[in-house]
Image 1 (cartoon, helix red, strand yellow):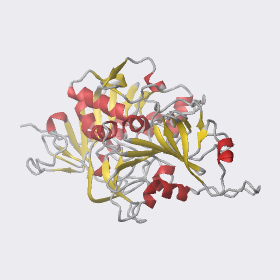
Image 2 (image 1 turned 90 degrees about the vertical axis):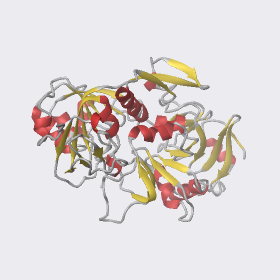
Image 3 (image 1 turned 90 degrees about the horizontal axis):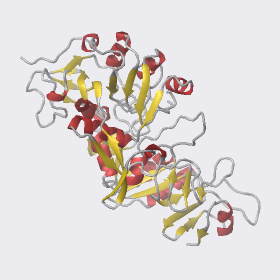
Image 4 (image 1 turned 180 degrees about the horizontal axis):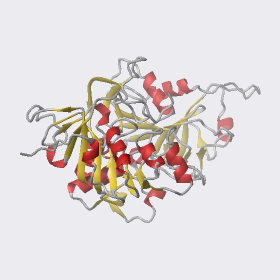
Length: 221
Length: 231
């Protein structure tokens, strides 16, 4: 989408461009867990010649892309309950082993969606706290504490334009100071001890404009 | 002779009582023992505590059990799905209690019960609402939360093959909670698609050793349906 008001015109990254950008940072040999929603797109952008071990909390390591239409087997699904395939060498295991892998530090990277990320890396992605909302946590809290690195992939602002990168999360936390990197449709942001550092911006977006859409101070990359 | 084969789901669940805690295997629809859940509904008992990763998909299985008003409490990690309308309604009306547990903590609480462990410290959930009021300790340089074992009267699980000693194998991601729930319940009932003679299962490939299983019920194979997603 392009903002028309020149000279501030910028071009947001699409969902697939975001996924491609995340995929670029996933190296050969990594064990990766993709959260449900936006992060699942990352799998579509990993080059075929790069061996990455995909882990899913429901007990599969080494799964592959979605099956052809008509080939779906709902005994072979990912965390989002979508059908997947198994690569040669892929294996199955029970839930306690699967979460042992996650909590025990055996997953190199997890990519999660988020409602909010704070300047210190706090993550909120399981509950809005609204009175009629039904809370659902799944495996997010286990990944947040256990993965080697937690990356977040989300839109930079809410549908109503509120920043999702904030000074402090107002939604209930999933994990404390766990996020290492944030990929949005506007920027790639590193979370470090000195705060948030902008590693990349989408085409045409000034640091000032990005700062105006962010709820906490950013440092230039 | 040890023979754990029970001919029908109804016979396998004939002693489930009101107020029982019943673990039900499955993640989404994979591994849900539909025939056993149907038999539990038929059995007619109420006031149940159900332990499952989710809170039912659509109008059948756990969804139907909830709709029939048989469930007092659900212990799960992820109740909210596109097709969890029976749970959603009952929860909003205050007619079913929810104990929300991070999924890995749920799995480990179940495993602990089966392994004779009273409780454990885990970093999962530290500093969040789900750890509120729980004992914490700093171990190995990080804050951890005390969680207790989760026992059950019955576990209803879905396996692929079984023999009369109760040895089980599973099929792909339908394995999920089956092996640990089998350990945690006083009585474990496993549905299987094939009963095989003793010795026919490769001993190197048996996932659940028979001592964790009390009853094995043969059921016809039905294609697992999609659940928890829009299709």
